[in-house]
Every structure is written in C-alpha cells, then in structure tokens.
Image (tube, rainbow, N blue to C red):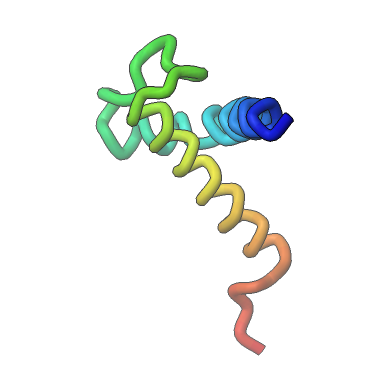
Length: 71
C-alpha cells in the first residue's frame, strides 16, 4: 500500500510541477534541457525540472499570501 502511495505521489508531483518548471529550465539551460519526451522519466533533468516547478509554485504562493510584504 505504501509503495502505491509513493508512486501516486510521484506521478502527481511530476504532473503538476514539470509543466510549471519547463519554461524556467529551458531558459536557464538555454534550451538544452529538458529533452523532449522526458516528462515522466526518472532522468536527472526531469527531476530538476519538477523541482524548479515546485520552487516556482512555493514562491508564487508565498507572494500571493503577501509573505514578502514588509509592514
């Protein structure tokens, strides 16, 4: 049961974070990474792309909740 939840969590993580991180990763690597067809792969570039997408989501959420506003 635990393995099934791990696979499902990884699938959801990549399904949400990869498309958000894709344009940032392309810009950072000048179009070299991620390679075409690496969305649900276990390659390092796909994992980095998803991690960048997660960072963008977290920073965007913090900005939306006004965490960067000095009172």
